[in-house]
Length: 275
Ligand code: C2E
Ligand code: CA
Ligand code: CA
Ligand code: CA
Image 1 (cartoon, protein in one colour):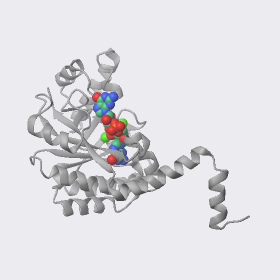
Image 2 (cartoon, rainbow, N blue to C red; image 1 turned 120 degrees about the vertical axis):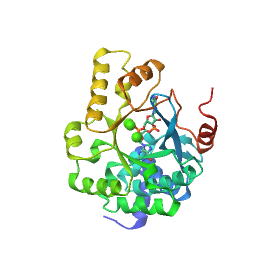
Image 3 (cartoon, rainbow, N blue to C red; image 1 turned 180 degrees about the vertical axis):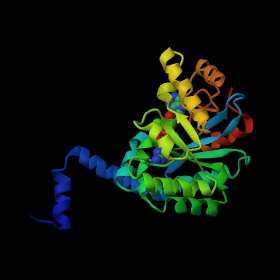
Image 4 (spheres, helix red, strand yellow; image 1 turned 90 degrees about the vertical axis):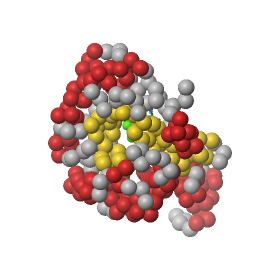
C-alpha cells in the first residue's frame, strides 16, 4: 500500500474515526500548550494540624486553553503520559512554580506530582536539581509526591531516584495512600517522609465507624514508621476535628481552599483564607 505522506493525509481527512481524530488534535495542541506555557501551576493550600496554619501548597496543573477555557488534569495528564510529554510538562510547571514561590515567605513549601512514567527516566533527579539551581529554590522546600503505581515498575530504579532526591534535601510523599495494592510492602522497602491519605477515606470518616478506624490505623502506622501524615480532601469541619484529635499532622481540602491561581495564592499567603 501507499506509505507516502499524501496517502496518510487522505486517510486522516476522510476515513479516520472521530475519536482518533480528536485525540490527534489534542496531542498536537498539548505539545504546543507545553512549549507556549499554557499549562499553569495552580496552588492548593496545605495547613498544619492543629492550628490550621498555612505551611505550603500542592502544585496542580491547569491548562488555560485558548478556546476551551480551564482544563483539569483528567483531560490531559494521561495523554501527556502516554505520548512521552509528561516530563516536559512537569519541568515547565516546576520551573514556573519555583519562580512563583520565590516571592513567598521561606517557610512555605511546594509539593509537586511526579508521574509513574517519569521514574523510567534515569535523569529525573538531575532534571529536578537543574531547575532548583536555575530558579534558586531551596531543595528543602520541595516535596515530590509519587503514587504507588510508580513503584511497581522498577523498584531498584525508583529507589535510586528517591535516594538521590532525598540526599539533596527534597522530601518524598507517598500519594493517594490506601488506593494501591501493596502499600505495606512499599512502606517497608522504601523510605518516605510523608503519607498522604487518599480523600476517598477522608470523605467518609464521619459516615462510618469502619472508615474512621481505618484512617486512625493509617495515621498510627505512619507515625510508628516515623512518617508524617496529610489528610487529603477535607471538606467539612467534622472530619477536620476528628483528624486533629487522632494526631494527623497536615490537612488539605476544599475546607481550606481549592486549587487557585498564583494571584489568589499570593493573596492567601498575605491575608489567609477568604472569609
Ligand atoms: P492528586 O495529586 O491526588 O491531587 C488532589 C486532587 O484532589 C486535585 O484534583 C484537587 O483539586 C482535588 N481535591 C483537593 N481537595 C479536594 C476536596 O476537598 N474535595 C474534592 N472533591 N477534591 C479535592 P485535580 O487538580 O483535578 O488533579 C487530579 C490529579 O491529577 C491529581 O490528583 C494528580 O494525580 C494529577 N495531577 C495534577 N497535576 C499534576 C501534575 O502536574 N503532574 C502529574 N503527574 N499529575 C498531576
Ligand atoms: Ca498529589
Ligand atoms: Ca492525592
Ligand atoms: Ca488522586
